[in-house]
Image (cartoon, rainbow, N blue to C red; front, side, top):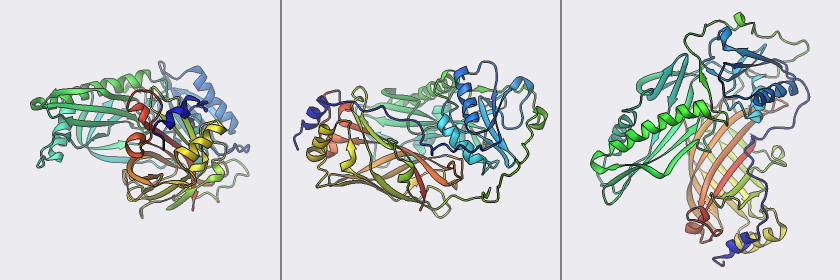
Length: 480
């Protein structure tokens, strides 16, 4: 393979459409689903008039009654932040746990909740960073990786992480470490990841990321180029500075985010009332509606396969180089795969096997595609690329319909006969489609070191951006 072939090909690249970040949805079912969609707001919410109208239009599309509720009239149990979207019908009441700008995901939520209402749950957590304000609970699940770099062989990583967490919370003004807490389902979570490193010259660095609870794929904050820094003997200072910065960033995101993470805390001064007191009684069962076919206690299937019929016309696997050369992009159009959950129907110890046909790689130009397939990825000699894994790191919770789960998966990726270990961030949510059929919505991302592992140069640009491919997947699976 010519080492500069990729750059030459990209010089004649015709851009394909931008990455599709909209969740796949089944074709619209014109049959009305009934029920009510309630949007709770208060003065000062970031949600725009257009975004409110989008939610109202979705309700109309699905035959759902839309209602707008202002917190000045009081709030029932579970309304601790605004905006909050609630769906209810004769079967029960469900809270939308997603970004209010994500209409596609809200559509899936309504279709699932109309048949399987949410159950009231709490999560018991230990040593959790919690901010209790007004009626709301905000929490930070914190991940600290092992110290990397210049580390002694007898270094105790667990003791280090315990001390690092204490240092992280040391100067926080709102969050504090709570030894044991039961987080209600209305809690808002911001996931923080810290990556400590000690250099040979004694300096200590901490890189950081923050993820919304609604998306574990794209971080809402990244501090890699200029990590938090401290001297080796005062390494805790790097974590303390990181804690102060991340707390400020979370409060900024809650106040200013335009992608759906903005929210306002409902004050304790707001009157607590009942749903019925606000006129939001559960609707009566519509005449002629049959519910016997839908078991509210329906369990998620253990075994799943890629649902090709539900992913037609959607770019389910896209790739691009990193910024600033991320305009070099393409997609894959032929994939299959399977996933088996653990015995308790959780993602821990799950097994996955996914395969793409290399001949289906496209960058939007027939001549370019032929050259890529024949000379660069050698699609004839290596007709498939695979990703296999036999374990995932999640919460251990049983998957339930309408509840998303974020996981980290370590597996083996094989391309051109070369296998490398990679780490995949994924988010999975069991849903019901427009016809009431169970599906598993999967979003995932991973990066490939193209030059380092496969000996292929990328386009002309800064390293590592020009040598790293970023993959994004968004597809549906069905029970096997």
